[in-house]
Every structure is written in structure tokens, then in C-alpha cells.
Image 1 (cartoon, rainbow, N blue to C red):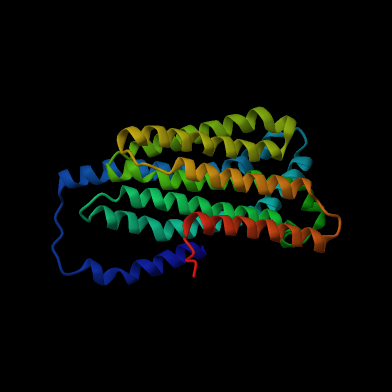
Image 2 (image 1 turned 60 degrees about the vertical axis):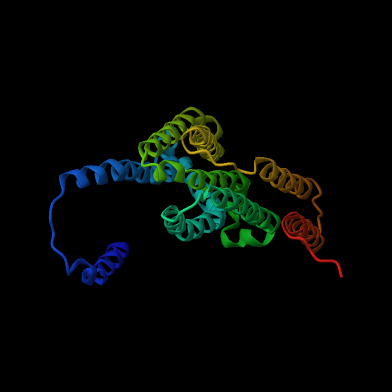
Length: 293
């Protein structure tokens, strides 16, 4: 209801923009608009479904409905922390999408800029991932009921899935820029089919962990598909070597923090802060030349 009221008020704000010209139906233009936008509608609806379908079908995959609701509550509570990555991606989307379409209208090749944007997006997403995982001892208090803390093991998996979703969003501009949005709808449907299938197969045995891994696999697959086909249709020279280096360093630091687990929380958080600073210093050294006086 709140969303309906907000969007209705926004619509009234645009009324002045809808005056001052004559309305005329153009069948050819309408066909172009629908050809471009209808697959995006499918993409958007299926995209929302991809993020919620596991929670919708979860109760139906358990023999015991009461136990299913308990497990779903634990899973839902744990994913609240992973929403930090989702908020970062959403903020990036709002800022980056208008920028890309604005750049596309300018003369010159904007592909190197798209490649740089991808690299820096992944760098900051990895930084967000490490920050959340390193300070989980503090962030877990977002979940007030400590009985739900058993579900925190899904957080890195869900955050990795969100990271792939963000990379997929960055890759998705190729089919929008060449007016082949049908590819986007196809990728989303493939992802949805994978997520639903994996949930149906594995949730009865592995519970909400299967939900987390299903999302990760689904987003990873459509990311790879979008990259492979995108390189054929609209080639962009991404810095794969540099990006892989950041991913490996972040993964290494995460593994160190996972296995070097001090019992004293102050020492543990201090150690992880040092690890996070190492990643920040690595980023700075790789991207900025500090002048030596």
C-alpha cells in the first residue's frame, strides 16, 4: 500500500511533463517499444521471482510444516545481514544505469569505461563482503533472537550470490545497448529454472543451505552465459587477470580469517581489521601511484 501511494504521488509530479505536445499513435514506434521493453518486463518479473522463489516453495518441500516454518525463519533472519551487499548493488544500479545510456549517446567508444566500471564494482563488492564477514561478531546482533544465529553460515553463500547478481547486472548492458533484450529474458528464465530445480531436488535433504547454494549456482550460471554471449555480440575487454587477482586475494584473506579464529573477541576483531586493511592497501597499491618525495 505504501509503495502504491508513493508511486501514485510520483506520477502526479510528472503531469507537467505530459503537456505541451500533441498525442499521435505511431504503430511502428509502438512495435519497437514493445519489442524492446516486453522482454525487460519478463526479465524484471523473473528476477524478482529468482530472489523470492526459494522462500515461497520452501514450506512445500518439507514433510513437517512446523519445522519448515522454523527453518525458513532462521534462513530469512540470516539473509538480512546479506542484504548489505544487496543494498550496495541497488545503489550502484540507480547511479550506473542512467550513466551508461547517457554515455552510449555520446560519440566515441565507451567500452573501456564499462570495463573499468566492472573492475571497480567488483573491488568494492569484495571489500563489502570482507567487511561483513570479518565483523560478523558485531553484525549478528541485527538478528535479535540468538536462536537464529545458527543460520549465519548461509551469509557468505548468499553474499556471493548477490555479488554474481551484481556482476550479471554489469554485463547485462550489452543486450540493452544493441536492442536485443530477449537475451536478458532468456538468461533470467534459465536462472529461475535452475534455482527452482535445485531447491526441489536438494531442500528436502539439506534444508535452507540448499536454498543458498541454489541461488549461488543460478546467478553464477547466467553470469557466465551473459559474458560468453556478450563477448560475441558486443565485445568488451574486461581486465580478467586483474579482477581474478582481487578475487583470489579476498578469498585468501577470508580463508585466513576463517581458520585463524581467536577465542578472545577483541583480538579476533583486531586481527580481522588488519586483514581488511591489507586488502585496502593492496587495492591502493594496484590502482594508485603514491609519489615518492
